[in-house]
Structures are given as C-alpha cells and as structure tokens.
Amino acid sequence: MKYLAALMSLYALLFLAGNSKHESSTFSALADTTDINPNGSSELALLMRKMNQHVQQAREDVQNGRIPQAYPSEFEKIYSATPTTETTKKEYFNHYADVYISALRSYSKSEQENQKKNYNNLVSTCIVCHTTHCPGPLMVIEKLPLD
Ligand code: HEC
Image (cartoon, rainbow, N blue to C red; front, top):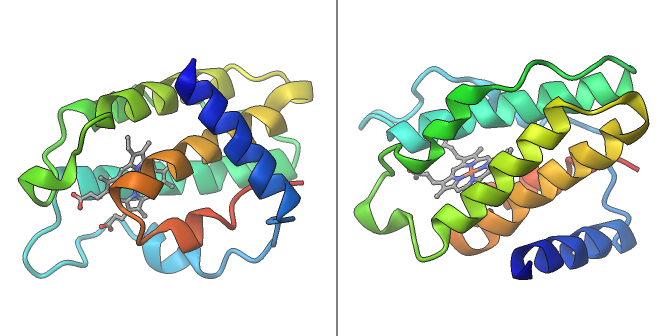
C-alpha cells in the first residue's frame, strides 16, 4: 500500500509539473538493444533497454488508439537478471519490480478507456524505482507520461 501511495503522489507531481512533452528523439539512442557498452552490458541493463522499447511502443499505441501488445512475460526476468554490479539492486528492488510487473499486467489488459491511465501508471513505476536505483535514465523516462 505504501508503494501505491508513493506512486500516486509521484504521478500527481508529474501531472502538476505538466511533464508531457511529446518529443521522443532522445529515446532513439536508448532504443538500441545491441550492446553499446564495450565491457559488455549486464543482463539487467539489456532487459531495461527492451523494457524501454516496450514502453515507447506503448506510448505510440496509446497516442494512435491501438490496443496494447500482449503481456511481455520475459520482463519477469527483472527479478533474476544480473545487474552491472552486485550493489546495483538495493533494498526494496523486488518491491519496486512487483509494482512494475503488476502495472505491466494492468496495462497489457487495458480497455481503450483506461489504456492511457494504465500507461501513465506503468511509467510512474519506472520512475519510482529509478529514483532510488539508477537516476541516470530519469531525464528520459520523465518525458514519457501523456496528458
Ligand atoms: C525495479 C527497479 C526498476 C524498474 C521498475 C525499472 N528500472 Fe530501469 N534500471 C534499473 C536499474 C537497477 C538499472 C541499472 C542496470 C544495470 O546497470 O545493471 C536500470 C537501467 C535502465 C536503463 C539503462 C540501460 C542501459 O543501457 O544501461 C534504462 C534506459 C532504463 N532502466 C529504463 C527503464 C524504463 C523505461 C522502465 C519502465 C518501463 C524501467 N527502467 C523500470 C531499475 C529499474
């Protein structure tokens, strides 16, 4: 419940900030799932790039009135995927992952009338985890919510 409350207030904040810019060019660099890291990206980092592609596709689907893609069960690997360093996954990582997976399920089952709301909720679960776990991509993720 605590997490849900955090999510709701975060979503409200984003909403108030009018954070709904529509440009998505910044995403193209991150959309590439080929390995850009010469030392080899972690399993978790590669999964994140796929999750990022998925959420961008979802954003386009919402904007174009298309129904959601099927639930991508491969993203459940988020729990076991090896991060870059052992300390990357901090306390509560699994709780944030639960909230993400549950939002992903809801989004994937969305009807047209709640698809945008479920999409925005999904984005806020990326933000909540990133705030404590990996602030780097936040600048990009914070541009994802839709009005
Ligand atoms: C449960 C926590 C959590 C959730 C939820 C989460 N992330 Fe991440 N994300 C991370 C962590 C931790 C890393 C760093 C991975 C590493 O370095 O191994 C990361 C890395 C990334 C990266 C950088 C990948 C790279 O190329 O190195 C992107 C982009 C990203 N996440 C986007 C997203 C998006 C978009 C969502 C929502 C659809 C999301 N994340 C949801 C924790 C999370």
